[in-house]
Image 1 (cartoon, rainbow, N blue to C red):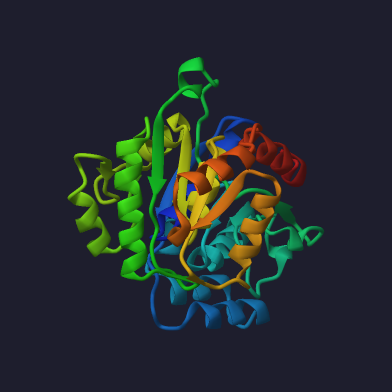
Image 2 (image 1 turned 120 degrees about the vertical axis):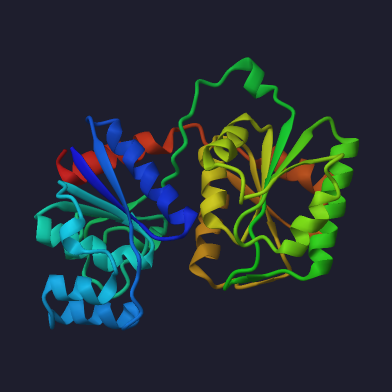
Length: 326
């Protein structure tokens, strides 16, 4: 099957697309073309989606208003895959102009679900909606068979996000986290590998740089995503800042115990927080406020967590096979 993946500039989004690709490759041979979309800023995406909904302009004109890429340069495919709101319009336009099936990971906003072959969402509130599949956010992890060596591994992985629309951190919380990591590496039998992301504050990275005697720091600017996933799979347990549900999902998909670290200031009513509550309900995840981080709270959380046993991509492959008739 010929597949086109549309990408924006957010790693969490194109990681989901790569996870979908891995799931589909379980069903049949695939060839893939990856296209990075470059937005124009003539009209907001919301306005363009309105024009699409009302069918006020042709698909080629809508494409020309939305993207710098030339529509004629996009290769013909049987299936379009994307994630992230900036790719929504392109996903629909290509599917319609190429008579292709299409998969989107995330919320389709005001666009009709009938314009998609499959919509992947982690939110159970969407269960039963047209063309929706309820699943973990896809992650491109290739899981090896669990070995005795991996099961006894003494590596701890820390995935750091940063401020977002629903989460804010003050420097005192970052200082608490830094002190915790330093003490954890000194007094536990684990090695500590810390991975930053594009949202991790520069001031925090600079402070972590001074702890290289006690932790292994991997900066997002120089670390490939497959190295992050490899370390997650090898970890005894994983800490993730709660602002990134994508990183939390990737950690859970690695089939390791996952503890989310949250600040005192966050939006308790967000969709992402509701998603986290569902993950907690499966016992794949526990959360700890950064201010209360200590050995006792961590040990208590680890006793309650039951890591995911299933390969989430096997579930997704079966669901896509049924939905798309592959």
